[in-house]
Length: 254
Image (cartoon, rainbow, N blue to C red; front, side, top):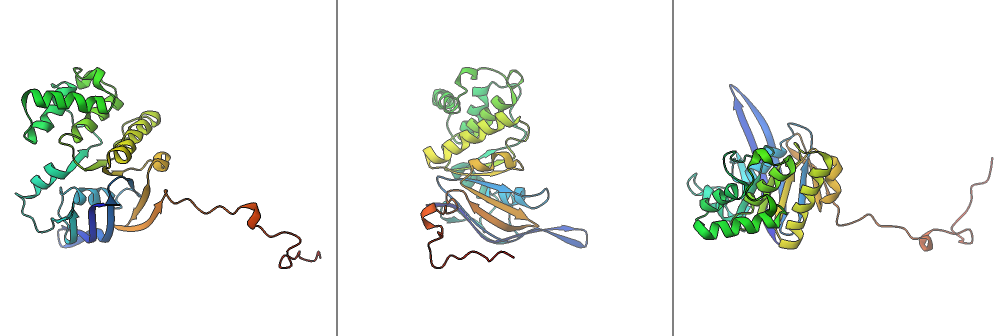
């Protein structure tokens, strides 16, 4: 699978007075196109910090970050926004919709940032809302939408400009379990059917089965990686020892 984001030896430290706090320490991680990856772990483990570095919102203290094959670690503050605009869409926990704009207008704002305006922006915004199954609410204001519908608008906005990478920070935290699962199922579809690389920070273990890989972060480091596309081997009855097998012996009763 093609690598969309490559993280190597990434460390992030913060100075608090004379003390230094390490949020990430030597993290290695690849995010592939066509996969839904979950970043999980306890609060304060560093998973949101890692997602922010992957999205070029935060800079790492050390290490290497590649986006779509481009090394971006040493890019200037003026160059990083163009990387985000060209390659990455973000979905936030709090939706971050403009309350005075309709659903379609909220998506149009993101398109305008990428140089798409006028009739073309309206056409693409409506198509994106249709892609997240919300075209029937295109002209509704956020106050008239449910939590799940707001998150779908936020998802449509993140897809503006057709980025190959989608990053989401706790996108289901404000949703009930059923609605949250439907949003994650949509993200999985976007990964599998549209070959996007999708990474989601979540605490919700109930939706972990939807992911292709689950990466656990603890104390600023990757503690485990579970690949759900590779099921545990199943031992068939034909491979179990039988009583007639000369290597199979019963323990003598006491």
